[in-house]
Length: 332
Image (tube, rainbow, N blue to C red):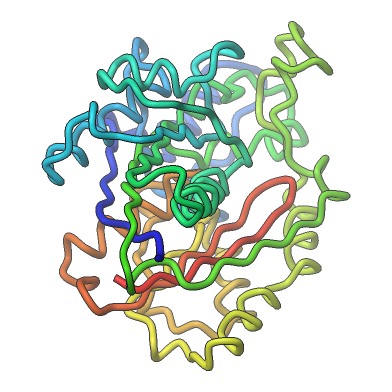
């Protein structure tokens, strides 16, 4: 018995914030202002979405999950398990999954799963294992990302601007997937790897035991050069091994959903993997880095466009701070 992705939806807030607006707000908020046009030139991102001020991560997850349950004709009371998988959270305690379940009207067991931008991919992995073991039959995986709350607007100099750059690429978003058992179709390969020695190259350090209350640690920090070298060192061997194990080539796939951080990072991945560009769903220019919602957003978009349907094969490749890389192969 396999675990099948029986439905997937995404949700994007209506408010659009352009890279020009981001640069202008930085210039208006502090002593340093970036060169106009630098964000789009360096990242390839022209706009991103921003959640309303009174919305939380749980609200974005509920918006996507509610749409998914309606599409599938499934009631919240029919869920066996709910996993909230996100880099964002409403609060430290309780698990945001409880808040999502309460807003949906679900009464099933719940828990949170966090692994930066690979949170959803790892939640699918866990949900599949629990379905395979017979513990649950219908698992809802959902995410709500609100990175806009961790952006540093007042920047003292160019060095701090570069360190804070991840916050300027990220987009608020929500997504949801439904996992159910199927006798022959579904997830047929999963593999993950990590280089945890590189965890410090990209962080949002505030709110934990290391920096519980210092506001200066409540913003994204990253060394982009070190992060790129860490990913290049980690490589895409796990992807090649998966394809070799099943005797597959990229021609066997209808879609490659890969986590898209910036255009330069995407180009590095395409060159290293040999994947054809036409397998992708373009995300960066209009939506920016969608964090853990990136893969379900691409999958939902491809389904809506008629690019993926019954009988098609899909590759999901996740990249995340920490750092980690994962791959899932799925038969639809």
